[in-house]
Length: 160
Image: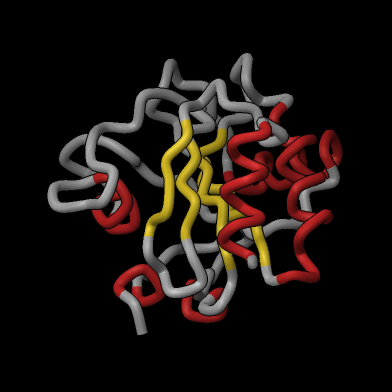
């Protein structure tokens, strides 16, 4: 099993969110926030999830409060917001840190030293495309919309 699929992540709803269960899926891993100017990307992320889910694709949302405290609420409030406002059905983790000394192991793997696309996360809604084998295939800036042609092309290529 890949290092990616071995990482332990807590689910937004409590308990563990087993990344091992997503082995064989193409994933778009996104650090998200509910009070950000980019928060409306949730709608397009959900649309992507629905569009490609049957082909083995999933979005993985990872709430983070490190950027201008734009995710200050509890996990329960985040879940309620995402369900009410965007009908989010893709898996989401509990809040975690993406940069700094407390950077979560998943982000050390995605963007840490020795990663395929290293460097600090610049803002909410930065995206990593992860292949079925757990290898990071691409990194997309926060302002890259989920329906951006280059991102869609990368997803479709990974699913092929």
